[in-house]
Every structure is written in structure tokens, then in C-alpha cells.
Amino acid sequence: MHGHRLIGEQGAQQTARHLSHRADTILIVLGLFAIFSVFVCGKVALYALGNMEAVVSSVPDDTGYFYKIAQNVVAGKGLTFDGVNETNGFQPLWLYLLLPLAWAMREAPVDLYLRAALIYQLSLVAIAGILFFLAMSLYSRRSVALASTVLFYLFGIFFANGMETGALVLCLSALLYFSLRCRPFFSECKIKPAFVFGLLLGLTMLARLDMVFLLIIIYTFLLWKIFFNAVPSNRMSLIRQSLASVFAFSLVTVPYFTYNKIHFGAIMPISGQLKNSFPYILQPDFGTDRFPTQVLLIFISICIFSAVSTFRFWRSQRNFDVLERYKIGILLIGTTSVLIHYFNTALFMKWAVFSWQFAFYFFHACIIFAYILDNFTAKKDILPQNAQKTQSALLKNSALSIYFMESFCRGLLHRIISGFSAFALRFTVTIIIVALFGVLLFLSYKVSTLQPKGWHPQAYRAAVWVRNNLPQDTRLAMKDAGLFGLLSERTVINLDGLVNNLQYQEYLRRKQLNEYFRQKGVQYLVQHAYWPGRPQYTEFVDASYTHFDITFRSQLYNTISDPIGLYREDEVYRSHIYYDGPYRTVFVIWRLR
Image (tube, rainbow, N blue to C red; front, side):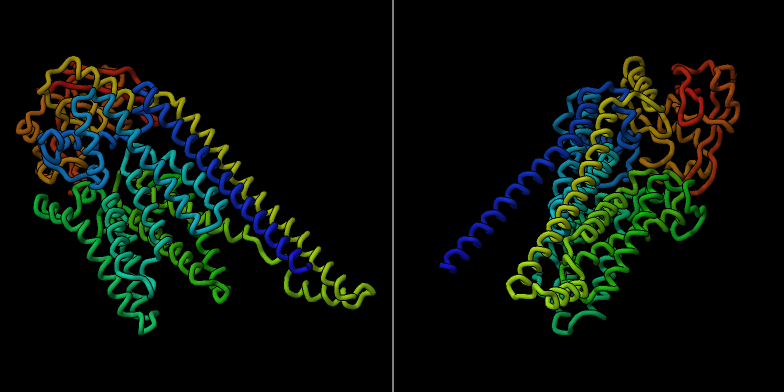
């Protein structure tokens, strides 16, 4: 009789646990759906329904480079932004992903193409968030995974900017999920997971080429494990897995770098050659003059919390199982990659450093957030060991030290404290999720109601004017030519060199820019950011000048070009005065003599 009653109680407990788990799963799914919806709706409202001037205000100018090059590829013009000069100044994977859309919309109005491309990139970030949640569910408790996913989508407001960041976070999320699910490079792991890992790592690097630092750290760790930390019987297995992953990685990346070397003379794209001075340290800067403020804050947070997590691991590593060691390994590999990237940027980057280039920092911060939250809100034993011994001794020495009463009191105390502790921990995580969700809701609303700002709306207005007033075969030249070049539907040669080629740098070095313009058939020069300190700045802004000369810098050779003469009477377009950052300026188009 007693046995039947015990079996019945156990069955009831299992049913209760099953129902509780099912209820938790439903809540998690509903929460994830709400987070996903709030993130997507704000951006879609802007991209699909917002004024075009607000749309272009929300994205970097460099988005236009990708979208225009994709248009030219499907039009049969090759890898070129202006239709005149071949270039490789782009992150390759995002361009490849744009080609189907560019082909499908080759007859569509360019404004509609831009909106569709931005929504397409947004969808990559949204899908990456779901993958990130699945990965974090393997990395931590599901409630913590949900909290870290809210943080991911908070950062996703910045990831979803029309740039390569969408492809990057999608590849990183897939790489993280696969690593936690299949655990490549374990001694018992087979060749196939290592091969797939190499493919994903190759795609991640093509998504953004400075992920080479992640590659270096991963394979350095593998070499250390093979030669210094592997059990001799497992060494050959690790070597085979490493070789398989390197082979898969090479299948993905070698064709791209080979093409660069054959057609452009270097494996690094022109944009990387212009921005990075490696191995020469020319303009070192570790502060806000080089790094956006929010990037520095994230970097400092990563360093602090990684140090805390590492200290905790080394102090208690005997209590950690294999999975916990794998998790801390992922955390340390990511943090080391961030450190190397930071020092590379501080020591060797010369110009054009923007927040989206640090998307990996924000992604890794989400992982660290999950690790910290999971460890510090995990359900612990209800009483320290010494306290449990003291409690037992007290009960035994009391008048109520009858066996069944002692067991009953100890069990009751255990349940009360354990229940309260579990409730407090769950409540803490819930509060964090709700708070982060509130911030996400606020930012999503702000995005959906964004107003035009900066110089991008002026570029759009000027592009529309060009479309309506200048012939189809007109050729113009401009720095920061992405959005203007895309939306004007004209040939616009890029003058900062990012999507041009080395030939242009040679003309700048030899001070033959006027000759370059003649050879390329440039008829108009466009200027959007003429700042204080330049010749006749006040007269230019007020339209009271008669003539002035303008020069352009070669970022490769650090030289100044010969001057281009500009005349007030040759202006064919002038905007009203606006602010580019803190500076008053105007958007002007001149006809060249």
C-alpha cells in the first residue's frame, strides 16, 4: 500500500514537472516572438513606409557602395561602383548575398530597390537573433538565453544598418550554435563537424575580413592543444580535425583572395590598403579620437567581465565539467580576438573608423552577458555545507531529535529556502528581461519615427535633381559617394578611393588629378562636407566666393593632389545651409572647366 502511494506521488511530481516545463517553454516562445516582433516592426515601419530622406538618414553612406556594385554586376559591368573602374573595396559575402535581390529588382525604381535591400539586411539580423537564442540555450538556461537575446536585438538596432553586419552576425550565430551543438575538436568528434566548422569560419571571414583575428586565435588554440595539452592517444584525431577544417576554410576563402591577387595585385582589398598602415605605426590612438564612445564602453566591459569570469574559472576549475570548460574556452577565444582587433585598430588604422566595424564586440558582449548572468543567478545549494552540519547537530541535540521529526524539519527547511532562492533568482532574470525589453521597445519606436538629419537627406535631394536634370551619360566625381552614386543613377567616381583602385592613387601621388578627370570623362564635381579650416570656408558657405582651389588626399601614399579650380559661376546645384555634425556647410555641384 505504501509502495503504491509512493509510486503515485512520484508520478504526480513528474506530471507537475512536465506541465511546469511546458508552461515555461510556452512563455519563452511567446517572449521570443514579442522581442522579435518589436525589433522588426520599428525598422520595417521606417524602411517600408518612412520618408526617403528619413530612410537615408538611418544608414551609413557606404551602403550605397554595396547596392550599386551589385546592380552593376547583374547588369554585366563587373565589379565596379562607377561603371568605369574595377574595384574590390567591399566585404565580399554581403555583396554575394545582394546579387539575387539586385537581379530580381533590376527594373525597379532605385528608391524601391534601396528600401527592399535594407529590409533584406534587416531579415538577416532578425534570423541571426533566433539562431543566437538557440545557441545561448545550449550555453545557458533558457531564461538567460532570452535575456541575452533581448540584448542582441538591442544591439541589432545598430546591426541592422544596411551594411555587412547582417551577414556577419548571422555567420557568427551559426558558428556559435554549431560549435555548441556539435563541439568540433573534441577527441571523440569526427571529421565532418570539423569540416563544417571550417566552412562556417570561412563564411564568417568573408562576411568581414578583419575576422581574420578570430581565425588566428582559434587555430593558435588548436595548435597549443595538439602539442601541449592533448592526450597522446587523441593527438592524431585533433590533427585530422584541424586539417579538415583548414581545408574547408580554404575552399571558401582562397578563390576570393586569389582573384584579388590576380586582378588587383594584392590579396587585401583596396579599402583595407587605404585604411590600414600595418606593419607601420603611423597614428596610434587608443581613445575616443579613434574609437566611437559606445565601442570603448563595450570594450572595457568585455575586458572587466572576462577577467572576472576567468578568475572564477581558474579558482574553481576542478568543479567544472567538460561543457563548462568548453563555454569558458569560447568566451576567452572571443575576448582575445576583441583585444587583438582593438590594438590593430588603435595602432594601424588611419581613418574611416565607424561603430558598425565593431559588430563583433557587441556580439561577444552578449555572450559574456549570458555567461555572467547564468553563473550568478544559477540555483545553488540551499545551505553551505558547514551550515547544514550545524543545523543537523542542533536538531540532534534538541528534545525533538526523533528521527522522523529531524528528517521532516530538515526537509521542510530545505524546501522553504530552496523555493525562496529559486523564486528570487527567476524574478531577478525576469526583471532584467522586462527592463531590456522596455529599452528595446523605446528604441524601436524612436527608429520608426526617425526624422531626416545630417547630410544624407541633402545627398538624396541632390541625387533626385541629377536624375531629373542631367543626361544619363553624365559623369560626376565625389568623396563619400555611396548614396549619391546609387540614387542619382549616374556614373559617380569615388574620390576617397574606397571603391576605386590603385590607378587612382597613382594619379593622386603624381599630382595629375586634373589629367585623371580628363581621361575618365568627369564633367561635374560634387562636394558635401566643406568644413572650417579649408580655404575660403565662410565665403563658400555663404556663396560669396569667386574662385577657390580644392585638393584630395591619397590615403595610400599620404600625399596631396594637384588643385582643382572651382568657380562660383560654374555651380549648377546648391542646397540650403545645413549641419554636417557641428559644422555649417552646403551641398554643391560644379560643372568642371
